[in-house]
Amino acid sequence: MEESDGAVIAGSLETPGAFGVIFDRHGSTLLRFLARRVDPAEAEDLLGEVFRIAFERRSAFEQDRDSARPWLYGIAANVVAKHHRSEARRFRAMARVSARRPLDEDPAERAVAAADAGARWARVMDAIGTLPEAERQVLLLFAWEELSYDEIALALGVPVGTVRSRLSRGRARLTALTQGRDTTTDVALTSCDAGGEK
Amino acid sequence: MTDDLEPLRRARPDRLLPDDPPDPETLAREKARLMSAITGPEGVVVHRRTPSIYPRLAYRDEVAALDFLTRAFGLVERRESRMEQPGGMLAWLEIGDGVVMIGRAGEERHGLFSPLDVGAPTAAVNVYVHDIDAHYHRAESEGAQIVTPLEDMFWGDRRYEALDLEGHRWHFAERLSEIRA
Image (cartoon, rainbow over all chains, first blue to last red):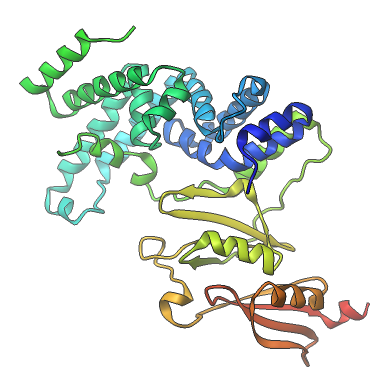
């Protein structure tokens, strides 16, 4: 059995070099996360930043946790938030690529006019870039990184209820932005806004 | 219910562009940077460049294969390069100055298959090692299936061949001139 991340981090307080194991276990996952969010070249620099911050803050890590991954995602999400202009640029570039080159992995999609599909993905990428930061973070941790509500709560340091409300607000807004407003989404948006967190 | 997040899932950049794994060199470099920031320049292991040619082998159970190849054949994983995904793991293994990449078999995984799927090996990986006799005994005792015995060959190698746990064929050798030296 491998040592838990909590135990490794505890050990790294005495022996700093042991923290390399945390990079071994999670570096590639975090690099992929960053490369989805900012320019790939910048993602490499940010990866170093994430792990340097994690190393400096390692004494704050709750050592009874098995996995440091949600905690690292939280640090990475903050680092991405500081680079929102790069993120917005990444999404615009993705929107252009997807408009040009629609995915046709689903045979049913091929039957649809390819240009339509491409335009739809372009709208999704455009829309995600314009969502409020808090909602974008939750939506992307959920849909792209496949974290659970609990893991997202841990990562962002907010209650699970907040994760749920941000997620439902974010998806309503995303649907409204990508499909054009209809009555249903207007209602959903209104009720979400009214029930806002804080 | 129809999932309103499906368009977002499908818009994920690495599903849209087939950019597959991040470059393992990037991870090795960033790890070296981190370690030198933490512990200073000593003790930093910097991986060599990935060679110009390196094979990729497919397994039905790539996690078991990783365990077997390190245990029985003495390959060493570049741990920081490992990619864990729901659809399977990718790992880079080194021996000497060579690298082999292993991943899950399947049509959607570059159309590569395990000998278990095909019913026969279709390639061999040739590896030069130090102390071929010790290597042979280790492989045998760890359960590798030896398919040609350890013997001196007329072209100047001492070699044996073995199958790994899913039947990929490995050819291990050492130059006789190095053994005698």
